[in-house]
Image (cartoon, rainbow over all chains, first blue to last red; front, side, top):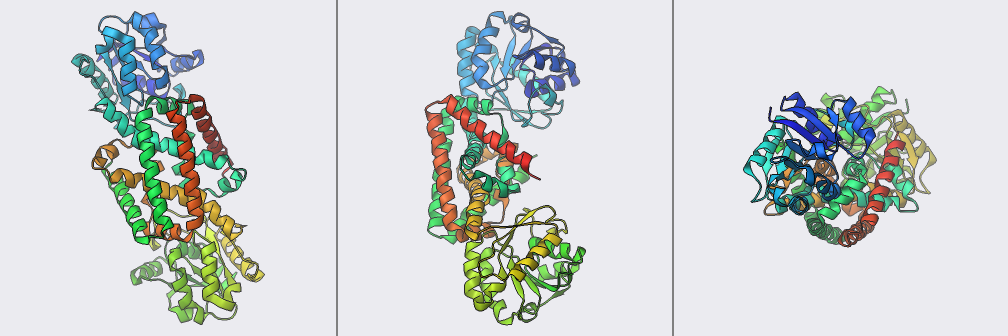
Length: 287
Length: 287
């Protein structure tokens, strides 16, 4: 048993999978659930993701509270939770951006900020909601924690132990570096996929184009099927790093454009070969 | 039996799968094979993709000759084949671009151009070579033919019947429209994936980025694992349409950039929502 009472705010894919994994591992005794939608909480109860649906006062009495919700909701939720936090209660989150969550939490939690452990599980699915939760979602996946200089070591250790009990590998990153890295390998690709699909969809003859799209297009654009609300929040929360990545990407596309325009076969082959080699290296290094 | 003798120039994934499917369907009696690499031809013989490896004089005596090779090789191959073509021999190809193949074939074949049927099977795999060939590669897949005003109707009908015997659905498109459509839904996504991976790989701290890349990145960049030579040829062969698509894509990214910079949450949500809807519609319409 790592903590007696765990509360999850948002009993969907991310929060529900965390709760399921910890129950299965015997790492928590009781899971309390909070959420915007009563139907979701009912479904979470039915699936055994949570033991009880509770309000903010009772959630504040949990030993650890996980926020598993769109990052844009963090400020409002912390404001509701803060007055009820018992001494020593640890708060953590699962948001895809970290610097803005840290700033939000610092403002909302005041002197309780030292018990806030910012986190980001690198796992997910296009599916969402309590029905999509699974005990093995985090098995072998990375979870990044971005604690601050004033975060309590005990709080970090507890959150780390919980994620490890859920099967994850925990790594520490500085929050700004986290945001730069994920702007490049996650946020930018999502925006690039959304932009490509929308650009085609906006054409008067768009249907002709979609009609011949095949498996390469399907994989390239799979992430354009992701939640628009979640990605709006992420794009705004990580705006600065994302703009830097967008500029670097557009610059790379312009280089490619000039090479194609100049019919520079050698330069094209060099770019494509480097890219394939880098990707193959990456694929083979993955666990 | 649709034709007695089929010759395939390039006995790899595309040509070998065509031959396998037609043999299984009883649509051809004998398959002749040509290729640059003796080892590939041996492998194709061993796997039963071809019945005999032959030279250009004998290939020209086949009833139908399929070119299944990088589009950049089309001119050289047609030049070798042309002097040996028997009367009525039909030549077709499987290249990913069509307007330049049409121009190349017209120049190389002269008055025999009317028996050339430009084609493009919308099927493939990251794998290549004779070992990757399978009889069902074209099952349910589209094949686009782009015959010209002076192409013999009989040649078109024969090539159409062969692809249908291989399990494919044959459609006719004007060559320029074909190239515009595939520039948008295939060639641009490939370049966009190559550019993204290469841009990261070129960074001094690129390893840190790749280290945290996950499933969204994997699918978005899968096509960056494709053959650099093949994509160099395609980018050059379809240069004009590709430059138009690159410009449209960069413009769409710039719109997205300005919306993120302005923190325009509604506009972001609108773009992401339209893209998701268009992609979901496309996925559900697919056979």
